[in-house]
Picture 1 (spheres, one colour):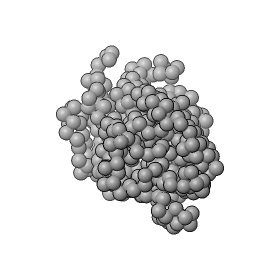
Picture 2 (cartoon, one colour; picture 1 turned 180 degrees about the vertical axis):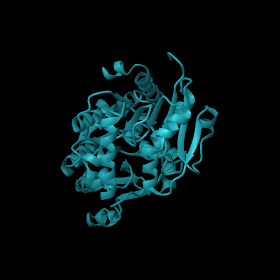
Picture 3 (tube, one colour; picture 1 turned 45 degrees about the horizontal axis):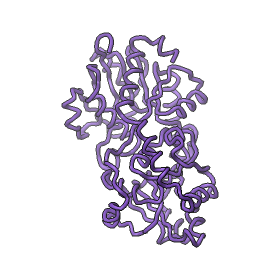
Picture 4 (cartoon, one colour; picture 1 turned 45 degrees about the vertical axis):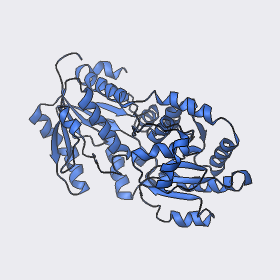
Length: 389
C-alpha cells in the first residue's frame, strides 16, 4: 500500500446472515467481502452500514470493521437511504470512497463513488421480475453504470454487457468471485449415509442447485430428464433439486406430474453448506441450466466438490467452468437432454472431475478482495491510470 490509509464507507444494507439467505448471491458476496476486509483490509478504515438488528460475526468485529446500523422497514426507505444518506456520512467521517456492494449508487458526494454490479438480469430479462421491481432495478442500474467513478463487476461477461448496454468503456474492474461453500469435498463412496438422512433415495441422479425461480430454467431441465428416462438404459436416473423457494414456481409439482416424473424428482429445499459436498459427490453430474448469471458460483462449488458439471453456455458460466465443463444451449430441451444422455453413456467422468479441481483453484475470495482494493485505491489516488485499464 502506498500513501495514507483510506477511509472507505461500505454500503452492506443487503447483508442477511440467516440460513437460506447467507447463500443467496448478493448476500453471500457481502458476507465474503466483509470477511476479506476484516482479514486483509490493508490498514484502511472501514465504516460499514448494515441493517438494524442484523447479527454480526465476531471475526468482523475482531478485524476492526466499524459498523453502523441502518433502520428501514420498507423498500422505499432503503432506496432513499442508499441514494440520499451517504453524502452526509461521507462528510461526517471524511470518507475518501463510498463502496456500494450492490447497485445502489448514491447521489453526487465528495467521495469517489464505487459500485458493484452483479448482473444485468433486470435489464436483459425483465420478465423474471415483478414489474415494479424491474422498473426500479433498470433505473438504478442505468444510473450506477453511467455515473459511478468506478464500476466493479464479477466477470468479463458482465463487464461486456455493461459496455454494450450503457456504452461505458472505463473504468470497469473485473473482480471474479470465490466459492460460497468452504465445506471440504468428500469421497463419493462416503456420501450414501448422508444422502439417506437428507431423503435422497435414487441410486443414480443428476443434481441441481439454485433458488426456485424461472431464470433458473428448472422446467426445461425436467423436460430434458423425461427425454433421458425414455431411453431404457438411463430410465433409472432421477433429479435432486436443492434451493430455497423463489417465485412463479408454485405449480412445479403439477408440471412434474404431467411429465410422469412424480417419483423421479426430489426437492430438498434449503440445504446447509455442510451437506452439499455429499450431493455433489454422489451425483452423476451437476447440471446448471440457468438462463443468465453474472458469475455462476454453483458451477465453481460443484467443481471444488468433485462433481462433473453440465452447464448452459452463457459466457459467464463458460468463464468460470473453462474447458472442465460440458455445455449445452439452455433454451433447448433437446440440447440439455443430449448433454445429459451423452454424459451418462460416456466414460469421461474422472477426467472431468480432475479438470474441475484444477479450474476451481483459479478462484478464491482473497483474490476478489485484493482486486477490489487495488481498484478502489487506484480510483482514489490515481484515477487517470485506472481509466486506461
